[in-house]
Image (cartoon, rainbow, N blue to C red; front, top):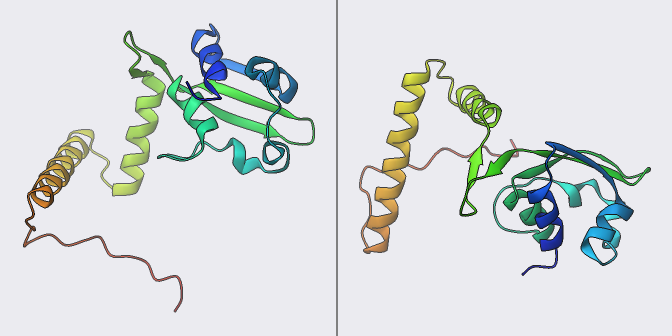
Length: 153
């Protein structure tokens, strides 16, 4: 069990879809003082994706994300992104799914949902096939990585 698991358990059992808490309330749930960086850096409260900070992994695993952080008043608002389904897996809310579709549409420029679904599934299949091929020691002769932006001219 990770050190932020008590917060995840509280959020998972919380019946409302939003919880505004003082840092003191969060510390009471955790049973220890938050690190100095939680008081000094908004980034500590970020909802970054991927592995990394154990605190965000705890609230994200419970289906929550931070929405507002006020370091001066030492307050953070959590909102439920999705509810866990039985067995602990995440079940996205309909508003969460719509937000994902909207983001995918903006990123790809594809506005037709059926075309977007087709593009997403095709991309997923290509990615998984490439991972399997690489695991077997092969390469994809027609694979072209996405172009990278150069930060300097």
